[in-house]
Length: 262
Image (cartoon, rainbow, N blue to C red; front, side):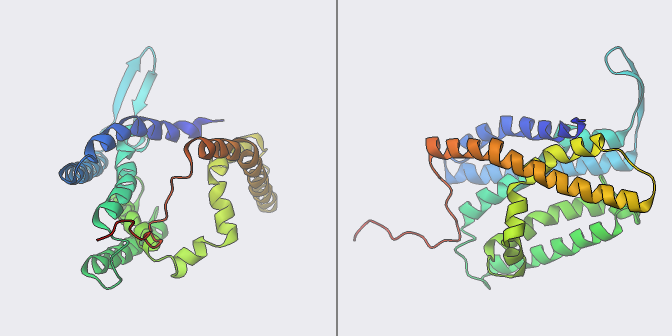
């Protein structure tokens, strides 16, 4: 019933190590560059491991008193093994470091670094759309170890960063709509509870009955996510803010005037 929570263990392992690396890597400019280079190399390494594993396609049999007897498929390892997902988390964390380190927010549209970002974001979006349309139809875009799938993953951070730096353009405005914000705040609860409701709900026969079940599941998942947000997540977030304060600063906001004088 809670089998889908395996993905949280990926994040737990990653965030066990990342804070220590971040503390070491942000102590100086030189260490920041080293952190960015090492994390980028690490992300690229795991992408190559996934691609290689998918290409080789080696499966193995096992007879283990704890695991049991059977066949372990390389696709399962590539999909569920924690280290195979670290590249995606690394790239996401690197976005924050790169934005601060290279002052991308302060650069004006049309500046060289912004032109490169615009091009990368457009290309990444095209590959992502191709992945969504061709996954399961074209082998080069099959999840999880195909070239197309991994190129789409590589393109997503550039698209996200472009949206972040262009808050008044279409995609950012759409994501700022009240309904999108409401869903975003409750996305964690939707992730936690939708599969539980899916398992508990009987699966009827017939297209009409399946459509009714789908509607019921969506509404019920939204309702449970709302309860989770109100009575579990929001209280914890309020306690965190009360204890540590709101340290979030919008990097797109104008910088405060300097208190120093000449």
